[in-house]
Length: 281
Ligand code: PMP
Image (cartoon, rainbow, N blue to C red):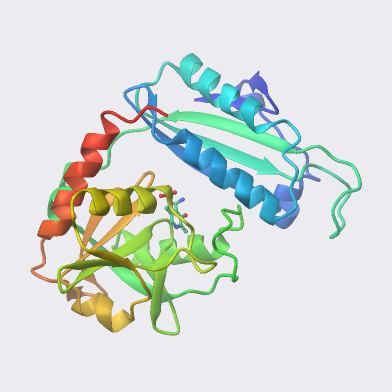
């Protein structure tokens, strides 16, 4: 595991941040997780662009510079020697004696952590996994990838306790996304996913899936669908940087479609897998 703290390489054991850090006290920060396949970054550019957008939304000035962050990510990966890795990036508003208002002067705390990543079990992708549904109790600005993940964490813990892989959120019966992934269904052979508004994270993988659909002439639409649509779907899958494209075959104990990964899901999985072997940006 390679750690860079505020642009400097530090030993994992000695990497420390202040008790006054606003990420710790207020969840006042944003993060990204980027996947590396075969030594190649998978859309680092898109992750950094999303991070900049999120920073602007919360009035966070990334004073160290986005180019510098990219350089550190690439340097840290090189030093790690890992071919398959996850790169965790976190930026907070920095440390300052605790007060709700923003510090008059402070510099960001920024961290890059490179870990070796191993693929999830093959049978997850081959057989599909289980999901549960939970009310979406998060705030209304889910498009910002903040480190305030308590609602997501509680939801994922519920899934784990139920022996499920993922928790799918709904707001008043409308499916938004999942605790750490976006949700897609196939209804009448058409791929549906929640519109990219303030109620979901605009997942990089979600975007890639939509590009795959477009390029492969799979009919798709970004529109709101209900819990009932979810249960009656022909196919369901979730998407995420670490999740990739994961078929869901059972939700709240009810079998989805034929109970196996569907045709459209499998074709998207295949196309996604191909991209992981070529994309380098
Ligand atoms: N939604 C949520 C709530 C997430 O935490 C994630 C994973 N970061 C995603 C969706 C998927 O986003 P991405 O494809 O960019 O990893």
